[in-house]
Image (cartoon, rainbow, N blue to C red):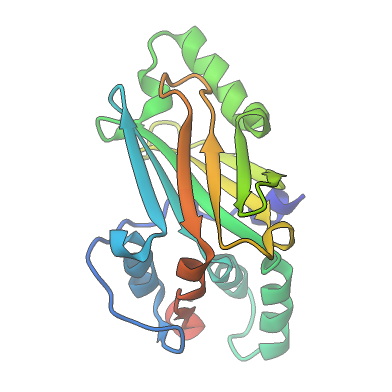
Length: 210
């Protein structure tokens, strides 16, 4: 499974706010690329707040996962780098975060029973609540895989890594990622992502990310 390949990756990327003027041909360090993505003008981070729950969807370039695996190999191994890029490039990745008062939303639901139930939902049932709708075709694309990151109260949000098959939306101009009500009381939410915004994401300078 895709998530088994990246389960060891750190899903909690440092949130660096501010604008980053760049272009596709420019290679950025990981910190610069995170800042670029987290700039609202990029179109790649979107948020809703419902009933005190902040729900944020953030695009995650596949190069992040390539860089993580490259930490265990020689930086000059260009063939292995190309292999890793091909391995991860068939999918779009997004981080979905639920937070409340700057803390993990899952730990602010009430009693232990509610917490335990949501752990099960987030760990094993989110394919029932997350889908992607292409445009203009209006095709439904299910999750290819996902991973819930158990941080045991050590994070500012409850985080999931979502994975969608890129090949199933080749003809789309944009797509809507829909998050149905899963137990946080937010109701159904929609996040619109334009492929043109993804295409503008600068390259990662691997030498500055290892």
